[in-house]
Image (cartoon, rainbow, N blue to C red; front, side):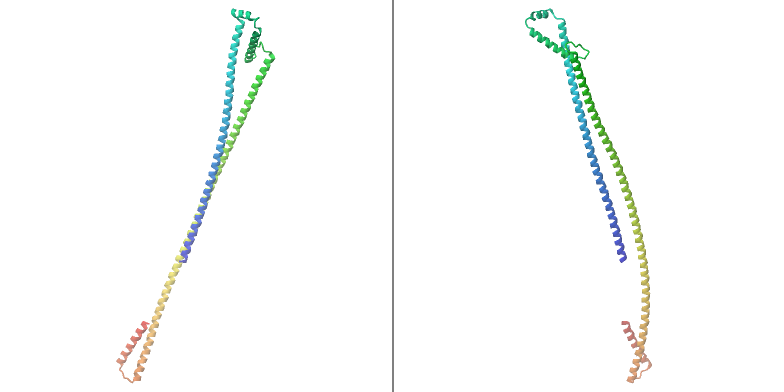
Length: 314
């Protein structure tokens, strides 16, 4: 019974150790899942930040393009207005070159009357011609505007165009550098993600290998325990066999003792029988009774039966 209790305690201890090892493995798996979730959340947040930065840069570029488009449209509108003014001035030149008789007569009549008004009209005409010449190319007619002034205007215009080109190229270069930086950051992030994925796969494979190793160790431990239990069972069966053999020997010894006790009882009965015979004989002799042999024998038999019954009761 003590061996059976120790066997149950051993099985209970083995079950508790196995349960504790499984609990540790489950805790490790849960910690790994939490770390993977944190890593995915960090990557999603970083990816959202990168997307927001790219969206912001794209919005700024679109705003710049729209602003330049508006400036270009305004320049086109100004050029259209300048073309209309040039057309009007050409028409006025044609009128000046080919005056009608009525206008000529009116001019003759009013020359001496309002010279200041005619001078103001002439100045206005020259001013409009200057606007027309500035709006045209350098190969156009330059009457009324000094060549140095035209060259200066052309130089200012060229400088402005160069500055605009430089500014646009600088903006384009900054945008390209920002895009390159964003592409490089995305490439590095992709490489880091690949490395982390590889490390996670490697860690998962390592955890699987550890689990397989622990499983093999548990199997070996269980096999060892089962072998121990089998050995204990064999020892218990051997002890039971020895116990049974001892019990058989004890039964044989008890049978021998009972046989010896019977022999002793028989000897005691015989001794008592002899004692009863002597007592009857002495009693008859003391009383002076003469008995025949048959009467004496019946009395001895009765005494013997009484002694045997008393010994049997004892």
